[in-house]
Image 1 (cartoon, rainbow, N blue to C red):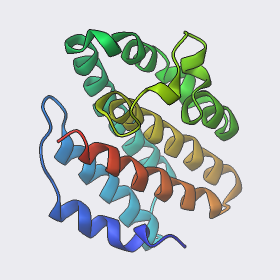
Image 2 (spheres, helix red, strand yellow):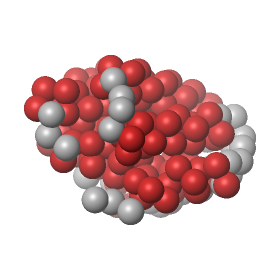
Image 3 (cartoon, rainbow, N blue to C red):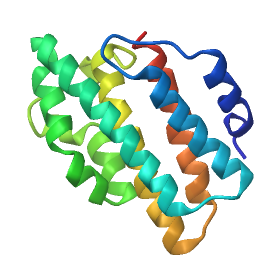
Length: 168
């Protein structure tokens, strides 16, 4: 069991802030709602999936805004925005390889390892990627009822909060 399951919702309330053009407070609130629901064991999977869609929408707006004002990262931001539908249909292994390990970036000539992991480009990208991964994991949970997928949702969302903090 991940310690973030218990600590993260409280951290979210205490650390809410705003990032330029990014709905930080709303994003963190939805992350907290998702983790709290999983912790309680009292949730509807489709409602959690819908929450991840909300996170993705917030992330896409952030990606769009950041790409428009940062030409150096415009190609990456466009790739993320244009790949959302595909991301949501990937398996966990596919999204891991393509987005967490950087294969999707390599396909357009970008080197994932050359982009600052906690810089704004990766942080904006990850607001979409981690929410999409959580959505895929929730669908797997719905199909299998295996709690390992809920643990992955908590892990994905706990990790993305670190990136959101870097957008402040």
